[in-house]
Length: 122
Image (cartoon, rainbow, N blue to C red):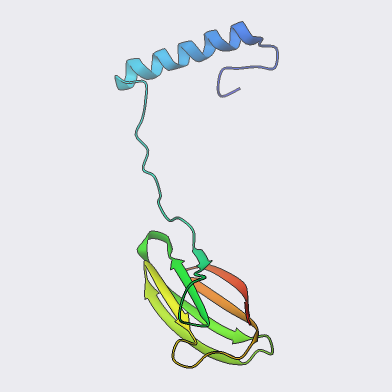
């Protein structure tokens, strides 16, 4: 096997192999650890903001601070509106004129990622 382990290894032999691999790693790199970049906000995040003056308020966090768009449609498919943003932002629908009670869908897109959120207005 690539790791140097086989199915016949027991705990002691696996430990010895791992110890040898770490030793070789330290010998070659001069350290026993490697710093790996951490991808923050690697995925699109959408959450409803409950206390808002708008009928529907969503906090959107786009991956890698990219652009996003939120489309709001009624359950009947009627287009209500769209809002664009960048990185992290609050999108509000029905702030100036309240939305009618009912079910809505928010379709949030950023790059190749998309999330659909079902929302209820009472």
